[in-house]
Length: 144
Ligand code: RB5
Image (cartoon, rainbow, N blue to C red):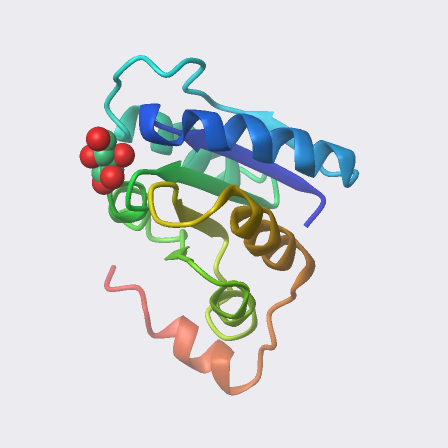
């Protein structure tokens, strides 16, 4: 992935800023959908713009950061064409791309180090979907 929409709530703000800098240094184009400070906000308000950026092909993928990674994942996965996975290791990040064709990475800021987050994000953007039997399974996810 060469283009990423990124979003977070107050719990993910510091990590989002660090990750944005890291990704830009790696040559990735980052579209920042907020939040833009550590003031308390409601995470869905920052998930919808990221999910819509991916659906509308404004970016190839998205990264969302909140305290547990769960609120942002639950919200993003309401969109039929979004597959958002919560990751706390590089191995999981690789597998959600290889096997699940995840198009949004969700990071639990309160439970991973910022160094780990960078490794997870790099793995996510560099890994491609394996297809084959996994495509058949991914095609069965949507209930609509
Ligand atoms: C914010 O305190 C926290 O609830 C939020 O970041 C997230 O973990 C929700 O799922």
